[in-house]
Image 1 (cartoon, rainbow, N blue to C red):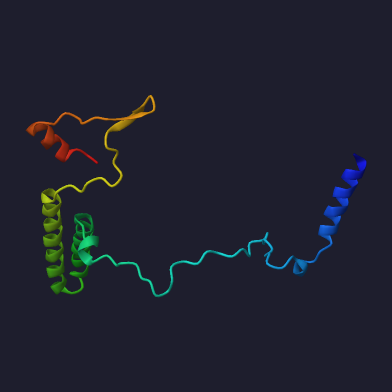
Image 2 (image 1 turned 120 degrees about the horizontal axis):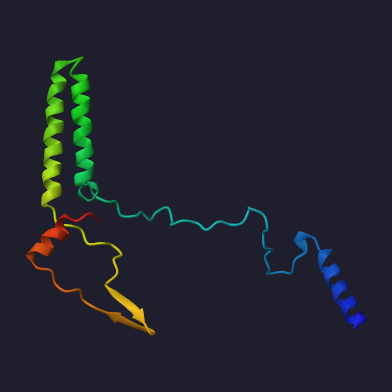
Length: 144
């Protein structure tokens, strides 16, 4: 038993004496420090599809832009009276965005569960009862 342990210790010590450049051919050393190879991102020639302006444009951004334009126009009108028109433009943008937010259809939830559950290792899906006109109106104005 002692001979076997002694032999294993000698093998381990023999492997420790090797320098980093003395590894077996075809085998790459595993770096331990933070100098590990990092995975490369997508190739430089490949571009992600850019979102167009209508995708980024929402009632919320227009509400903030209209309010900022309105406030900036009011403040700058003290120095140059023509900036009052920028303030009126901000009011128009704000009101337009507010009306748009009321009239637009709600977006579907991205990762909303379908209403099913696992029970006794089976997936059971159920459909909620359809709401009447009053229920649909309540759902329309409910907070999200």
